[in-house]
Length: 239
Image 1 (cartoon, rainbow, N blue to C red):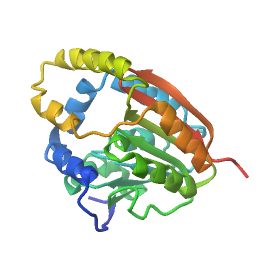
Image 2: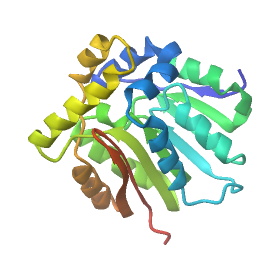
Image 3: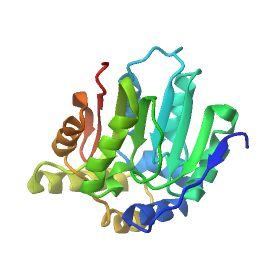
Image 4: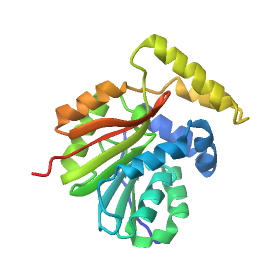
């Protein structure tokens, strides 16, 4: 394993419990998540298309809640001169990420930590997050957006693919019904996932865009949406 490894202490929170939950399933994560998340690869394609940099540029990237490295690998493949710091609260996830992305060598650094408390450094051109922010409380989401904004270099971009809350309870109920109908078509036993979802803390897209604007982001928008999943982001003004 060539990737660098760092560590930082964490407090027990819902985010860490989620990390433990998925950490126990790290070996199978890359097979079941694309089956359970509607149009997963469509969302990934949109997220990648919104990165505002030429593919040969040497960019610094931060992946928040990197898991087993699905998003990190996609970014590193697309940007051969990029270097990426992958942060996750689960050591099992990071171990799997290191195994999956070993070919990137020292272009990848792993750090165990619970966002937004973990030290993420700064000066990044791009910050990404895949299916992680909904484990945070709304207060931590707001704090997290401010932390991300401060960590970005001028002109940098933030893009997230996440589980989100509908704008109204009635629409939310419809979305959830349709989501589970699609998920059940995978043929998987979803009892464990249903139990886990009860503890999730999704926020509406509109609230999160407002929190991003309050943090200082410009060009804030939702770029893609499918039921309870969305791709959204913003940019730090190039001052």
